[in-house]
Length: 210
Image 1 (spheres, rainbow, N blue to C red):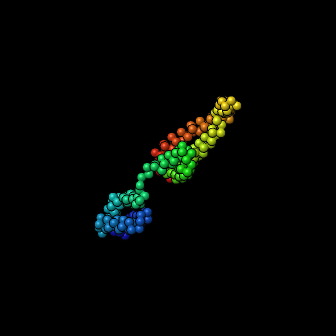
Image 2: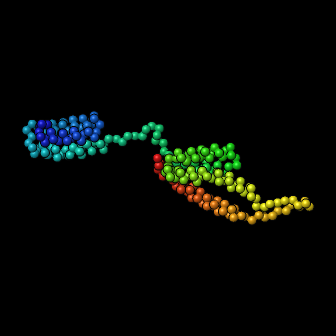
Image 3: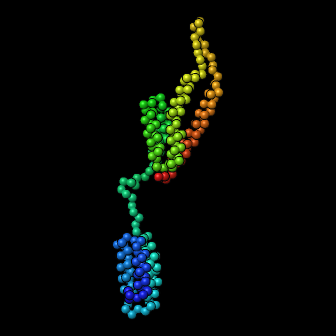
């Protein structure tokens, strides 16, 4: 009965669909279906019996779909299934902010700043846009702190001098227009810095963005 036109057509279609499976699985499936036909159809089976057997088997594409769905998903490669906890991102924020606070200790601050920038651009949970923004805003924290403190040192709020009588006199200096502009820019930067840190902390909760 395997030479019956309906059976032969079914087996041909099954063979075409089975190419979606690995070769050994496809051969095994075809062999099982041939065996089923041989057992279900006797030498005297009529066409109605053949059609009924084919209907019970279902479409060849459905059989292959079921075989594909039954295959186990590949497991993780050993050593690569460690969860990403966002520690790299947290360390990047801490290092860049710490470098800005400790900039006077430049032998310590500069390595912290460099390592922090490296961690920013190798972070896994931040998108490329967020990495670039973090590198610009947080990376500028230490240079800005150095400039502000240096400018403040050069433009002291009071100017003192000793008179001929040996008396110290100090005159208050008004803040210049440039000084007010610098203060406004510094406040604006601190607002942007705080907003950026909030965005980065929220980004740490996202799945791996690679």
